[in-house]
Image 1 (spheres, protein in one colour):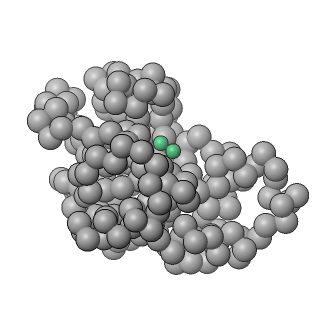
Image 2 (cartoon, helix red, strand yellow):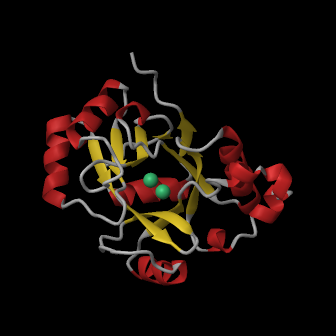
Length: 211
Ligand SMILES: [Zn+2]
Ligand SMILES: [Zn+2]
């Protein structure tokens, strides 16, 4: 089952240019079986999600992208509106208490500006970031990051034995499905999504090319 785990739509994510209905149509056209709406500090209502799923014919899941002092986190199974930036330790505590799941989004975004070489940061050093002690998984393929940044994330995930996921982080229609997570099993809800990531029953891929 091919799912884009990281997608933004307007108006809930004001930085996105994607209309939700256009997004699901594009996802379907590209052969995706589902998408996960991860708006910035904003939650979809269950009835709106169900309606979008009904109109689209694909599975619609939801999470939330929450900015912390350690960077952006994709949060699942934690249906609480967090209005503003929050210390990651506090978010971790609350999400764990609620039985939720946290994925570090684009953990090395912007590092290419300086260049890993100039920073002389090795994956072993990067793996020591406190962030990685406080999440359940990390994005290793993010559509907005350079190959180098994603490669660093992949190496760090291997060092830590932390699950790595893929998502487009689409803010524009042509970015939907740029990276996807391909699950072995059928997934019907966010709990199953989290369970399957934990169990490692997935691979990462690029969506079939749009035609
Ligand atoms: Zn982000
Ligand atoms: Zn995002």
